[in-house]
Structures are given as structure tokens and as C-alpha cells.
Image 1 (tube, rainbow, N blue to C red):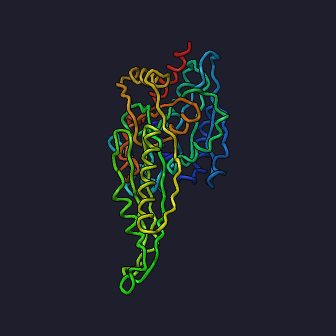
Image 2: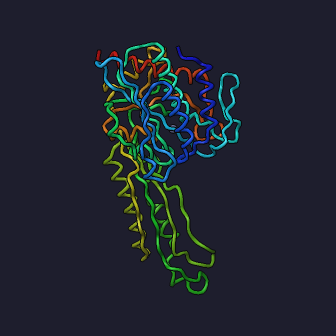
Image 3: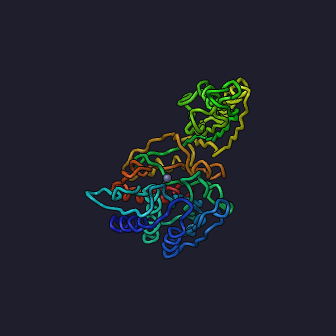
Amino acid sequence: MVSSSRIISEFMALSRIDRLSKREREAVHFVTGKLTALGLEVYQDQAHSTFGGEAGNVIAVLPGNNPGFPPVMFCAHLDVVEPGSGIEPVVEDGIITSKGETVLGADDGAGVVAILEALRCLIDSGTPHGDIEVVFTVAEEVGLLGSKGLERERLRSRFGFILDSGGPPGEIILQGPAQDSLEATFFGRAAHAGSNPQEGINAIQMAARAIARMNLGRVDEETTANIGVIQGGRATNIIPDRVELKGEARSQQEDQLNKQVLHMQGCLEKAAQEFGGRVEIRIERQYPPFRLDPSEEPVHIASKAAREIGIEPRLKSSGGGSDANILNGYGIKCVNLGLGMQKVHTTEEHIAVQDLVRAAEYVLALIKNCAVSKA
Ligand SMILES: [Zn+2]
């Protein structure tokens, strides 16, 4: 049985550990100790060497006690967003919050402790299961860097579950968009704004014209685009010779994304040409899309397990990126599951104790259903 006092105290202990993205050394140490104590083989990969982090992803295996069952992966991330150092968790009336100066880090500490508690219950109960592969990633919040650098050849699972969605328990994310980032620098020509403006080329005006022509916001049902940062200029009496833009586009459909990015690129180039200036554009694929069919194994198992613990499953698509985008790209079919954490990435982040307990029960039900699926 899942123990509410045990999961709360583990959650509180993890919450007190500073674990901002790329600085997860102590959190890695914490979960490594827990997993080792449970009898898992624990390995830390070298993903951090690709982005200058403190520690790599934790990959642990609980060997199966029934060779007929398929291996399954469970994944959560260790890092938290800013303001996230010195978190002081508080439990009050069944709700866990931070003291208010920081995020709580239920995103994704809730996923981490749910997996740990479920493993503990599984081992105690002697329930039959296949190999269970646990992946605790680092630097998820800063561009999925941990999962991008994951030593994926160490994993045998063909499917799995990610515990990292803000939705209510029972929400199953089976689809997510691809994202491209776009950075552009316009180069004009500086001149005195009062005495000889005719010699200048205004980079801000160039950028403005380009942006004014762009389709932004919700482009269509599956595609969004945004210019989120603009920087440039030095003084009102100088015609600005340089301005930088940062933006992004996302779509559930890769061809729609490519079309949108080409459109944005076209607007930038056309404006530069019209003004006789120049633009440098950098476009980078941040992550690929993923899409599972409702009939696929992890979706089916996640729905069945939810009903078993008394919650109604709801299949949804996500507008954001997560480790699910990267892991599905590796050929590990996985859904992202709602944990009930609220107001993530704010200082009002909180989670109900009941949801924390339910998340662990859910993981346990998932493991049991994986075993049943091939039995
Ligand atoms: Zn998260």
C-alpha cells in the first residue's frame, strides 16, 4: 500500500534540495541513494558533458521477476525552474505549497517521488513484473537537454510513461507539437536622426515591418507562433543600425511548422530587402513532434490503469514540449501523465497530498497492467 506519510516526507526532503537546471548534483545523489537502497542497479550517464551541467541523467533498472513481461520505462525530471533555490515546502490542509518565495518543484518532484514510492510498494508486495527502467532526467526545463543527451542505448523498453504533466490525474497526453526557435538580427545603418536621417537605415523600422506582416499567435488549430523578444537601439537621436528578435513556432504537424517558419523567414528577408538593410536568421529545431494512436500500448495501459484506481482517463494533446517529445523520437512510445500539480512555474505552485498519493498508486497500477498486457 502506498503510504501517504512516507511519500510526503520524501517529497519534502527532495523539495529542500537545491536542483535548478544544470545544478542537480545533490538531487542525483539523493535519488541514487533511494534507488540503490531499493535494490536497483543505478547508472549516471554523461549527458551533462554536452551542456556544462553538474550531473547526468539517472538510469536505473529493477530486474523483472517474470521473464515473460516486457520492460517498461518510467521517467520524471529532477530539475526545477527559477525561482527555485532554497525551497521551503509547507503542508497545510492537505495541500503542499512553498513558503511563497520560490516555486514548489512539484514539477517534477511529484513525478520523482511517485515513481520511488510505487517501486517500494511493488517490491514489498512481491507482485510479478517485467524489467522496470527508471529515467530521472536533468536540465529538462532549459530545453530538454538531459533527454537530448540521454545514453538511450542503455534502455531496452519499447514503451513507457512520463510523469510530468500539469493536468489533473487521469489526463493522458498522447500528442505534442514540434518547436522551432527563430533568432534574427537586422543590420541597418546608423546616422544622426536630426541632421542627416536620409543616410541612415532604421533597423527597428525594418523589424517592425517584418513583424507587422507575420501571422502570429494561433495560426491554425495545430500551429502557434510568437515573437517574444525585441532588443535594439541606443538613443532617440541615433537611427538604430541593429535590432535583435527572438521567436518561436510550434505545430502538431511538421509540414505546417516548416511552412510557418518559412513564412516568418520570408517576412524578415522581404523587410530587409525593402529597406536596403540586411538580416541574419538562425532557425533551430528544438524538439520533434510526437503523436500516439489511442490504440497504442501505453495509451491503452494508461487508460486501463486509471480506471482501476477510480479515475476517468482523458486523452489530450499538449501545446508544450516535454521529455515525451525526445523519448518518442528515440522510438520509446510514451505518454505524459497528469499529476495534479497546479500553477507550475510560479511561486503559487502547489499540489494536493491526495494527488501525490494517487500518482504513486497510478504508477503501481501501470506496472501491474504492463505485466498483464503480455501475460
Ligand atoms: Zn516538468
